[in-house]
Image (cartoon, rainbow, N blue to C red; front, side):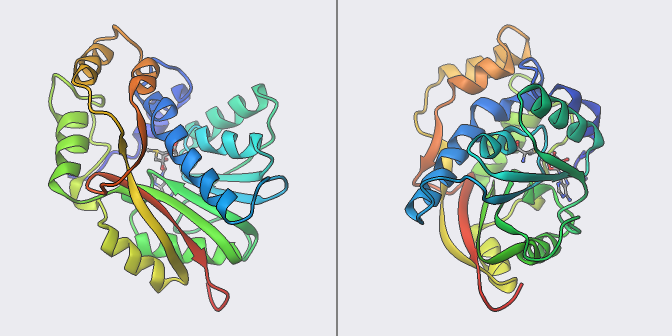
Length: 262
Ligand SMILES: C[S@@+](CC[C@H](N)C(=O)[O-])C[C@H]1O[C@@H](n2cnc3c(N)ncnc32)[C@H](O)[C@@H]1O
């Protein structure tokens, strides 16, 4: 089934509105992946991020872009959705942040060669038409030694159960009424690792990203969020997302741009 990437224009005005399903990412995956990326940066000697040039590929409403900007990075966000870019730009301005949002796709990034110290692409790789082109472009945009952070969804039965069946198909629980994901576009860690290597991005670490506590009340919360009895923002904050040992559903990691090529 083709995925509906137009949803980011149809409802992208509401990324920061807690009653909008896109806001689900704000309180759940965003802090989990940002904390992980920040810890990797710290381990690699970046105690402070001031002045680092960061590229956000598929920036959506700017949840991660704002975190990196607040930490002192000079952030460029790229996304094909005009409505999402306008929403992100408005929110950054209202928050006193300067973020350079540009319309474009990961397959053809509107940025010069070797112009970023770090790049990240979160919950986006499983939405793109051409994974190899996105990774080749990312490698082109990164300076040698630059870091590439990602998270995406594994093509497993668990990925299908959680992200396709529960989140998008079953009436009682679904968060979206439109196909935002297609199981066949999910990427296994083996496939992603090979693709990173093909484009001069040396895989450094890959780990699970998931619920750290399994609480059946969260399933009821999904239904309540769907009925408007709690907001998606509230629901997302009740999920205890973070680094987990299993990579069967969502996973994240990072790679290093090699010196030799891009
Ligand atoms: C699930 S959202 C994730 C947004 C953001 N990365 C976050 O985690 O908050 C997916 C985003 O990818 C964008 N997108 C879809 N196709 C893309 C492509 N080919 N290149 C870059 N971004 C793309 C969509 O417009 C949308 O904003």
